[in-house]
Length: 245
Image (cartoon, rainbow, N blue to C red; front, side, top):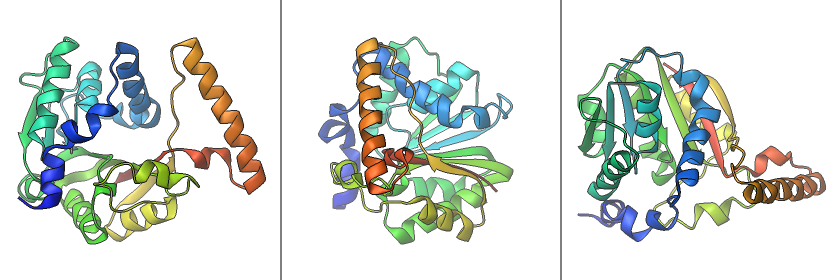
């Protein structure tokens, strides 16, 4: 096993366990984040649409889709750890996934070469872990694997943020940062029609103290943005994109 696959195989225990929400409110906030940025696009799909979640991690998208009534989900990750946690979290929250989600421990490139016909493919928090040639390759494979007019959902680290290195380099497996222009370039060259590329919007925290902290942070960034000539939205940690085959 090469070093990168070793890091990914143990991604949860060596890295992500420190960042995963530990409360019901925190977990729900992550689901709200998906709804706020991608919900209106996902809602256009029939509930039996074949959906592929590449690098599914600990199962946020699976939880969200199942709650929405989707019944034909493939969840692929190279890490057995991550998939084990994903199943545990779904069971913990009482979400029935048997017969609706097919979890697969497999390399995403290999999986996409042998599976197709998807109405939607999600590449959430994944592309930044790849080198540039691999990014183009996975987007080309995703294009081939989608149905005509199929949707591609993407979330990546935002290098437009002047403080992007703080988020990017805390994860040793990160390799390629993105700006909105760079992301549009990658999608265009691989044959996608871009529907939306934007700075990610975060939901309001459900607890008052967390909401106050978020408001204070936003005002601070607004003032800093005014000083630097940067729109405050550009301080988002991530970019989101929706594209169509």
